Length: 424
Image (tube, rainbow, N blue to C red; front, side, top):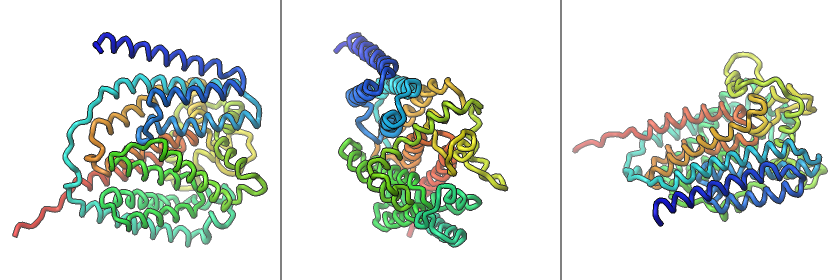
């Protein structure tokens, strides 16, 4: 095919994708049935154009999270509380603009070729492994001190969301060291493939699960599995995603039961409520919130380092609207951007797409199997945390992104150190 023909074909594809995205934005607001039908059609379109083909890619992972927790969650929300054409338009327009940008950047990525890299496996890893084991031991010790200090295990005590958050106040340093130990155990496995690192990963995850926050535990597992697939140079296709999703559902239900959330509800209803609660929060915030923060909430969680009583972003948000809930609320990425920028939030789908493109390009430029495993973990961590912000918003993830990026960047520097061998 000639260059002119290829350009013409790409132009036709772009125009077609644009028209279909416009249809999804405006026609889906007619009613719930049409909203569901067009959402399914748009899902199929994303499959056909390769925006849901490999979940190692940040664009695919972000789309998957959005489809499940926002599009899927909104369908259940509308079924229970009635169809809201404004919320439906916001969701469809944000998602369509995001993926139109993703599609344009995808054409650019198709022309990017990987470059040769030095085989990282030949590097010495003594200093890196020693540093990781130090943080693992330190994290476990701090976790034990945390539980001794509060005197109980929140997950097993039937503690309310407010009580779990209060247990963390003033103890953030203990839990942050535990989170670092989880990442350290991931690094050890990615570098050495030793089973003991899997045992340590499981142990540190269980210690974190005891606090009662299942989302962070599931997030760490996703980061770990995607990093393993990257290091192996193996595509993360739908067959793996489906199996992981089913296991994730089982995990959510087990933890929900341990936290006393199911009660008299059916398991199916409890699961659907879990998937849709953030969309319900967004709809409530859109109705009751108009004191826009212009990006200020992105830094709100950093105030946790200031001495004195502090509350996190989700708790602050719950206090700004008339909602009868004693814990924090997650507003979705749409609600978080709305809290900061009002109706202009839809336009922020474009810079998000640019960020996702940058992450994918960084990994495609190098051969996966020859990349430094710590660098892989660093990039995958940012990708997953961005996808996680779909439910909680950037403001809820900003501190976590900064702290884990600093830690993994330090480990990346350590991974490049070598011990000179003695010459006999």
